[in-house]
Length: 386
Ligand code: UD1
Image (cartoon, rainbow, N blue to C red; front, top):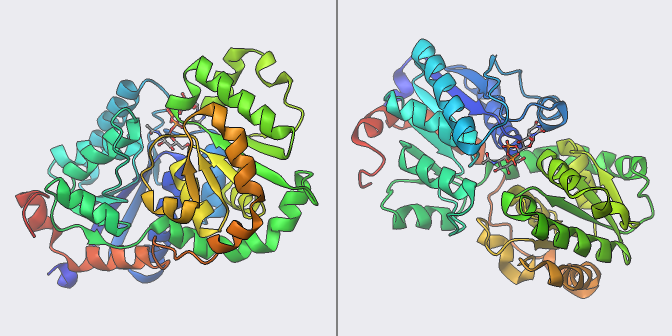
């Protein structure tokens, strides 16, 4: 048992926006309660704009990463390869006992591969999610990361079952660390929501929040044009607050001015911080999104969600129609408006059980790290039967 060892050197790697949220409660738990863990935080620099990165460290009160690898943007191969190269260099210098990687971004896979090949055990937080769609970069990242990890922290029962189906035994069912983060910050969000909504000129207004950034939706100009057309149609009936991701911003710019010129009912906003995003969401009539994390945040906050995709890695959100998958842009306006104004059905949403955990996933993860013999399981590989 590792409980008797004096100190454990743990490196946690983040780089893309959702990873800051997923990691914050783990960092908080280690810093507050576990002095035996010497934690180093590395930022790969995958996301670098202040509104995509620095604001999250402030709002979530996470200490500054000790190192930023400044990998920046690029093709998937070059971004992942740069993360691998720079992580390998770091890991060879610092030789942590364990590397923690959250989520499914290129940062997750690049860091996990670099560590696994150096024989450093990898712990994957948010293991076992599957959308069943290998055309998504995230699906490739999550599958490969799971298969080179020594410890698998699964947020839900479905995730545990997915891992077992792939022959990965011994995952830990912990709950979801994003729910830990959400529960922790909720009082602040509730406190500030009215002021935030007012700041955006939305007080006394009914509105739908929209976010889009998946390559499958925004990289194909025809598809993006059809989705923008659907937003404009919805905007004629209810205000749309469209929070525009940098990838989407550049793709919309390529379409030219006409793409948004008829969008009278649309308020365009740059990427928002965590508190602002949750505040906007908490008062919305409906969420239209292709984000993974926001489908779940809407579910926990009892906000109806329409997901512009044909699959989801969070199938639990589909229960009771709380989240509806609508890949066809033509159907979006009808379904969003139906969802937004079905008040009787909205009431039943608030009675749905939250299957994503009790807000204590991070505490469980840290306890397991302290108690498990992951060094041995690393040597015998994650596929060893439990
Ligand atoms: C990444 C993750 C995705 C996650 C999303 C959250 C992968 C494969 N995808 O997608 O799972 O849901 O983050 O935001 O890792 N850009 C900026 N400023 C930034 C960051 C990016 O302008 O701070 C622009 C660049 O033009 C870049 C593009 O956004 O080319 C896309 O960024 P990238 O990190 O490659 O992927 P995301 O689409 O953000």
